[in-house]
Length: 181
Image (cartoon, rainbow, N blue to C red; front, side, top):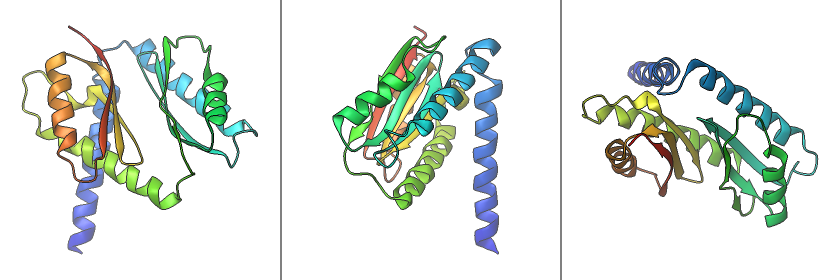
């Protein structure tokens, strides 16, 4: 019973934090919609590429026109093909291809990464900085590496990186921030 209550509270916190990222961004409403559409379109293109099937596990994340690719590809050629699949979308300022060339990981690893993402998001609630909103930071995880995106000040970025590094299970923190100052 106690475990169910704790899990419910944690899930509620994650949902609340996700809602913050939608309702309190530093980017305009149209930019938010465009980013979401690009992410859906890019992920669909990768998922529908038969040349990638069984040779890559790739996730996409988009924030303020920056398209991030993470996951794993069996060869450098597969990684490059994935980048080519998503190049040229309207509204994308740049593609950051951080796909690791390595053997494909298990579904269990994916679940661990999802859990790690949630724990990092929750940890950002502990940052005590005037005007800081954790919803301005988009977090993705692959292989224990945490990827941080968002429009933040340098001071906010430092605080977020330092906080993310304290979360158990984080192997590396990778900044893909854009700066407001």
